[in-house]
Image (tube, rainbow, N blue to C red; front, side):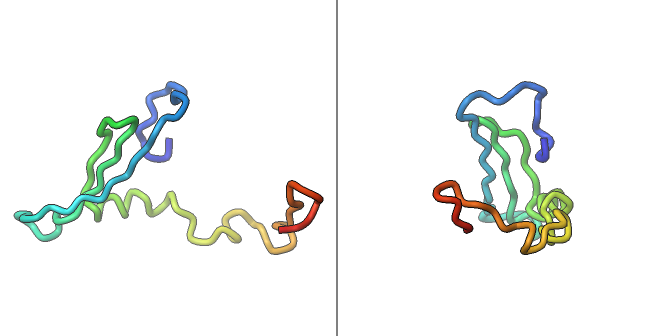
Length: 87
């Protein structure tokens, strides 16, 4: 969903999303030297210039987890799965 490639169907068991960084050896334009290819189950879904991919991801990656999730150290104190110890 966040990569805008969701087709409305639940993914198969072991579905795979791969994000590849490509470098063109002799680009006509130096800005087009790097590109990002997004694959879903081995099929290309999208190909973007690196600069466009960075802009695409800008609002999808939290800049501050504490601020965005409103979690402080006290709220993040969780019990471990074995013996109730903290981690």
